[in-house]
Image (cartoon, rainbow, N blue to C red; front, top):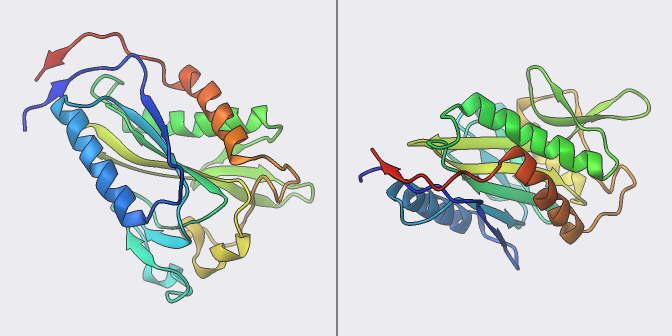
Length: 225
């Protein structure tokens, strides 16, 4: 397939009205990424919830799947290790064209982190990066550090898919079937666990509000390669 770059002024936003089965999400992401590469579709930010499930990244260690019979387990094809998706967690899948956004995967991941941090800040939560620990973390009053958001990406032919997951009000016990992202010794938290009763719609609004500052629109300068 010939690479055709058709930058969009800003990505399309889509919110799934019901829980999306994980295989369907993978198929739709791959199809959209192929269409972006081929120039027949623009960038997309797709906000979803999933039924309870675990996903395995390319670096997943078998021992980190503590309870393999608890929920379905899917090979995600993204980077990283095991993670959980389920109701009460906002997963944002981004199909972005890095051919017009710098061809820098590290910068892209940094921007995803910044997007989460700025979103949490507007909700009154201080999210932080940690060297050697993927995702965004919060520090509890007693000094414990707990993970509130996960990041996992795949880039194929400079088009991204997969993305981020922010814990709004999931059942945190569901994380007990895995070692989340291979990081033992630290817990997982959520906005509700921190005492913030934020609806999914409210979070979605803030995500859109902060997104444009991190991922500005690209001038319409079409080219092929």
